[in-house]
Image (cartoon, rainbow over all chains, first blue to last red; front, side):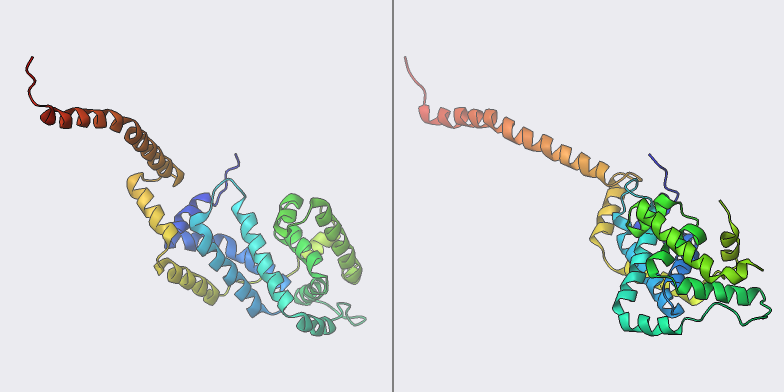
Length: 181
Length: 98
């Protein structure tokens, strides 16, 4: 049986142990927030989504059964679903934002520093369809393997690989000018 | 395999976790922990009976004890009832002279 590094902390959280809750939060919050920030354009909304995911964790920790699933996979799936819920709730806002996505291509001759490159990468990522963005985020930025990322997204590994390939292809095209530097 | 797109993506910013978000999340935990919960009561009870064991172990022990008790209740009263019959009929029968 696989040993879940979070199992002990989750069990203690289920018993109302605040120190365990703080440790679990410190371990997962940065990656959960990174995922939510990439999925939701509004940083405050991303924080709310992560907070909602933690409320679900605090509520369910006492009923967590070790060995059924990897805890972190479940937690990132909850986070991703909270982000999807918020995206679903605001379809018109998404369209408005889509119109505001900056063209990542710089003006000819522009001298880009590191921060400007980061801004262009963020813009290119934000312009990806949400499922491709989630696939790139999980596999590249969160360091998940394809199997785990597919499990988090609730899709097959083949579907994940397809999303990832399309996302990377789009990013390559949009960031072509940066890759030549 | 690492290609130049991966290297490029590494330039993307990593968000910092605001302290206010940590406070909000822990405040949620405190609020929920203060609320009475049936699962937590069961967990505490199980810990009192059988410390550090998963809940299913004391639950199984309880079920086993109930089964043994029920089995004893089903089997034992037969003999007890027969004994009662013997006892209650004796006073009415009276001494018999042969």
